[in-house]
Image (cartoon, rainbow, N blue to C red; front, side):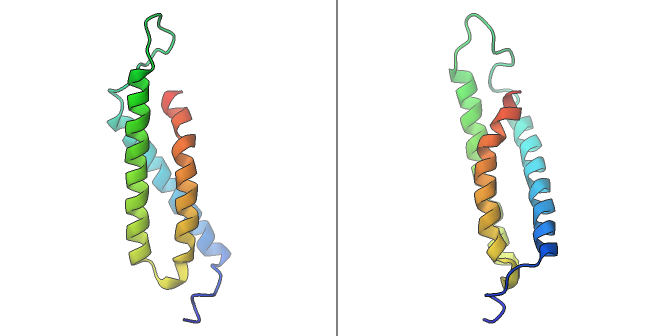
Length: 107
């Protein structure tokens, strides 16, 4: 139990950051490919409605949320106890990234 109270080193936080960026990049491009058929590419059409883009947004958001929860569950079971303290921090950051990634999705 002594190793539970120890803080993660800067090196492990840096590796966690690199893996987080890699996960978010792969997740974004994969979900962008999966949702490419949904939504309107030209937002400035005279008869454009929000419904198709809302569908794309919700599908992207729900799939990203499912990926993040699955990754958190796998990591919390597979990582050594010393590194498990980082998992929730990266999880909360990934939840925020769900909203941020919507900007380049429609950009």
